[in-house]
Length: 286
Image 1: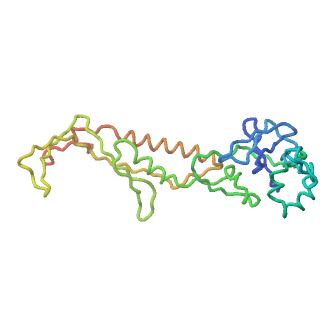
Image 2 (image 1 turned 135 degrees about the vertical axis):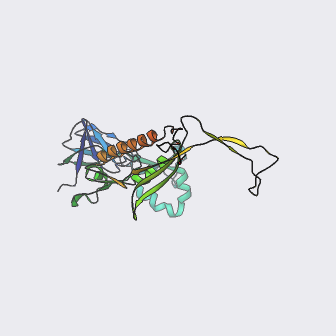
Image 3 (image 1 turned 180 degrees about the vertical axis):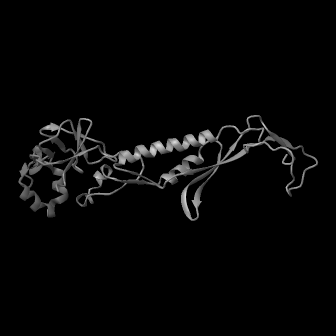
């Protein structure tokens, strides 16, 4: 199986070429390609068409062909106006510091190093992976085990969804606790405890206390609002599976929005008539 791949997405063609080198020019059939940044997409280059040949032109340092005096008027028998490379190198052990300050290089530009890849490139539908902080564990064909830049295009799973949601839910209004929900010893979701107000405000008087916990006779207490406690148990998987990373990311976002909506709907005010229990105490119960 060919180990050279090109990604096709929305009319653009993405080639993973690795580090092309400082000042290198990358061409698709002679037309300049666009480098996709130097962060998580380092090594990716884009073209507006599927290339028959991808070429990398890497500049080379100028070739030193001799040395000449920086000040030609100081030429002498010992220090001629020009030195061949061989003569300069032969004199370095004895006159190194002197000739270094007296002479400058004579250089000649070199042709760049041209490397071309005529393909064929195996086409995959998709684009370079986004850098959204989520992991992706892919099930790869054997030939792609060492080609991490293509992982996101193959079936796999995105781990850490439950841990992510636990942290997100802790930041939501009126959420007091978020714990793992277990069935026997198996964790299957999250248990969220909310503190919500009553539709008709309910308050209670709390006396001032001394440091030892006894009621203070010299200080007045205060009236505080009473909140209803509500628990919501959510089924939250540890991981999100998908045919591609993009598909799993979309499902991740959908489930996150769904869980947040559930907590938001559970955060509405509790009924003051029933004390938030869903039934009214009567007779002996009252």
